[in-house]
Image 1 (cartoon, rainbow, N blue to C red):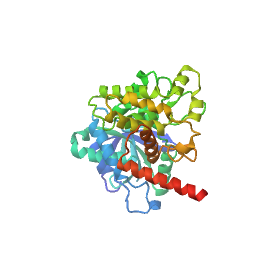
Image 2: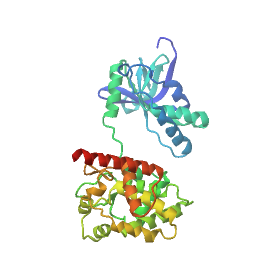
Image 3: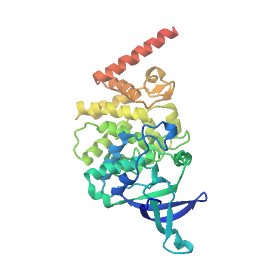
Image 4: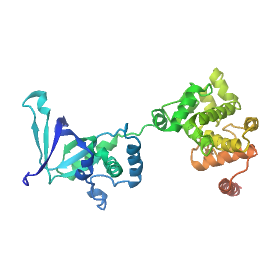
Length: 370
């Protein structure tokens, strides 16, 4: 502390791997001033963190400003490249873990975890300066070499696992579409007890027919662009649609009645899988828009489609790629094209282009094997 000037943080001292670290609270207005980014122009091997993904920042910033009463941010982890001092409030025992962390102003701070949170807070403060008095937890580690700082970054991210899409939807109360999907499952006999709420994929012996994420995305597909103006209207339409669809698939009812296992249906048929549910919703949206009064009488044609996975002539290259279900957007469109054609619905120009490309590819494969 040769310059005589220092930062002082109220802090709690802890021990990890026989090294001291410190936990403090930092006012948000100071966060952008204290903790600068490592230089983006440096080569990766000379940096202590990944480059900032600026495309993420607006969404994170909006999350704060649109939820000022209930946003949640976890602690930021920072390395300090300097000699520090810790002055405990008491002399001995547990009490000496609480005190003042003194850091020279010449110290270099490097964010090991939380650089995007810091950038989002910086952006949010420009429009909402009143947030500056709120605080965020900061964990300080001592590090006088870039090697340990890089290792810390690797260790902090080594075992980080994103929650499954289904679990994220289950715990999300901000997203109206997530709320609708959950209420649909809870209030509908066709989905109750046959939807996996946590996992995004189903084990062969699972007793569930669908995943929450598949219902969520398919229902979103159905309601996109629909004129329903209230959540209740949207929920009512979604329930009517999925109940009408369920009436066309005897296997769904037989699973609920215990006559078939969910695993048997998922193995032999494709109509419970996410790509097909989304394609059904895509076709259903057009059917409802074109025939708002009579769509339910027209959807019965779904019963005459051969939905067996073994029907490769119809589904290979559409819902199936090499015999495996594919959720890629192109496969959703191609599967929906087949359903729309069967229901007597016209394809859009974009759908026709995808269809033409698919047929050219299929014809090319036939010639190659001839």
